[in-house]
Structure formats: C-alpha cells, structure tokens
Image 1 (spheres, one colour):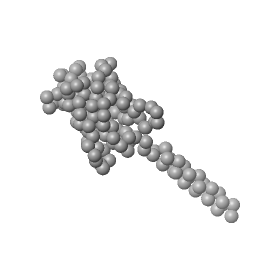
Image 2: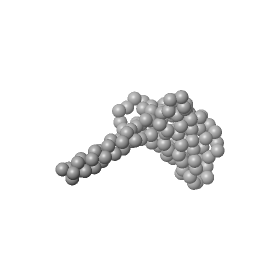
Image 3: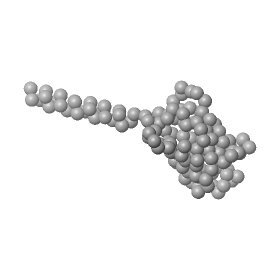
Image 4: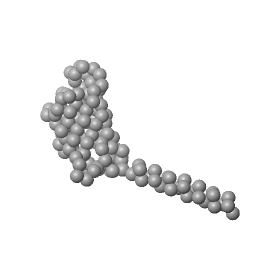
Length: 135
C-alpha cells in the first residue's frame, strides 16, 4: 500500500511538472507584428515598416520596408516569437535578419532583437551585427 501511495505521489509530481512546463511554454507573442517599428541596426537608427497579411500558418509571411527605401521579405512565427527577413535593394538580398520578439507585456512596448548578416557588399562590410527595435 505504501508503495502504491509513493508511486501515485511520484506520478502526481511528474504530471504536475509537465503541466507547469506547458504553462511556461505557453505563447504570449502577438499574432501580428504589422506596423512601424523604431530600430537600431549596428548603431544606425531607422524605421522598419512591417506588413503582415492575414494567415493561419504557423509562420506567417511579412513584407515591408527598412530605412525608408529598401524592401523586406520574410516571416514571423507568432507561436515562438521568431522573426526572419531579408533586406532587398533593387530586388537583391543584401542583408539577412534573424531575431525574436518579446512576449506581450501590458503597458510595455513590443521589443525585438537579434542579429543580421551582410551578404552583399552593397549592404555594408561583410559580417554579423546586432539589431533591436521597439513598437
């Protein structure tokens, strides 16, 4: 009998842990990140405008502009907060951005941060640099 009680207690702790882990992984990211963001990429401030059409995909397409004239094309995953896009100049990818969004916090701005790689010399000196933004 004591063994069964111990097994039941161990099972309850295990299931409780799994339940808690599920809560810890619960998404809190916004469904849409469309709008105007203030960004800083490698110490250069600017504006990132994101358009996000309605979609039910796990990772949703995004387009827009960065620094006024360059186009962006990529995706945002609202179930993980992951964002990825290419910066295009005259239709050619010059930089790749990879980052994550903060979860929604009432009364606080949305934040994103990550890194970008220069993949074409017209996009700057080859290498990897940081970027961040708020909305």
